[in-house]
Image (tube, rainbow, N blue to C red; front, side, top):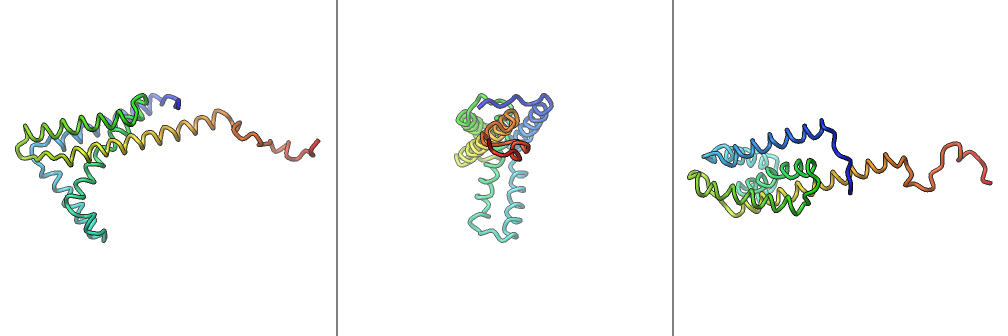
Length: 169
């Protein structure tokens, strides 16, 4: 798969989005207190319950895990669009290492935070999902680029409108 390089403008926009997400995620994950993230989880749990979703999906722990997955999807999605060489396996490994490091910092340096193995698993899963979405986007872009550059040459039986009107010889 050889995707045409992104334009400078697209790369700049993706890079800016990635940096913004890393900063936001760092603030949330490394804040001395979990009161901000807990507030978001609690209110999202209430909203999901009001929407009538089953309790098995709307417990505080499930919503927290879901948000941990979702929080890491943009990292590998945007990263894989910017840097096409690393594979989904590479992004998943990076997710594990980064998530593990965050949990170590929370356990060692942030007394009001609680580090858990479940967070490492959820964050790593988020990186896997983002990397797979990035792979899908790159394949769709590659297919679009190949179709546009071939001008319909992949359809061997395609005839021009003028040829369709001519009687067979």
